[in-house]
Image (tube, rainbow, N blue to C red; front, side):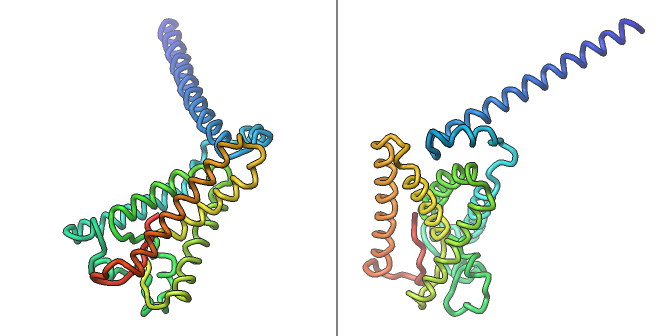
Length: 238
């Protein structure tokens, strides 16, 4: 009996030791992630405060969840109409209850739900890439409730602006939310510019300018120059 009790105690101690080591490895990985994020997003004098309160629970749930939802909706329509939807819009998406359509303005949810539908593989990959690479660091630093408000404000602002400035066009894609994240990232760079390495700050500002300029150029080309085939929509590719 004494030997069995000793074996039980020993196994319990070993299991507890393994759990502690596993937790230490997880914490170390989490600390490295937050340290990298703080160097990328914050000036040196604010990093200590951020690292003191930073943790990986909860993770950046909003950006990850909205990205999964957008990808799931795209796959649904792409599989339903695989011959065209991988590249461009088809009638299945045009009749979707999510897309913003000027003749369906009374269906108020469309002013937000259009962000779930995308006009082809390039459109969704561009949006997902940018909102993940910008949104996750922003959410880790500023928390999900703030980033979600900024993102959804961009989505609603995009549909409202389109309904006023281009009232005959339908709208798809999460570009409004992505532009809101770009705006948040841009302001983060401006506010912390003096504390950054000058060349690093200039590079980030130029990168934002190139992304926005390229996207606006493609959007204007598709809207006013490219030949129109099928339903007319605005689906900016960020």
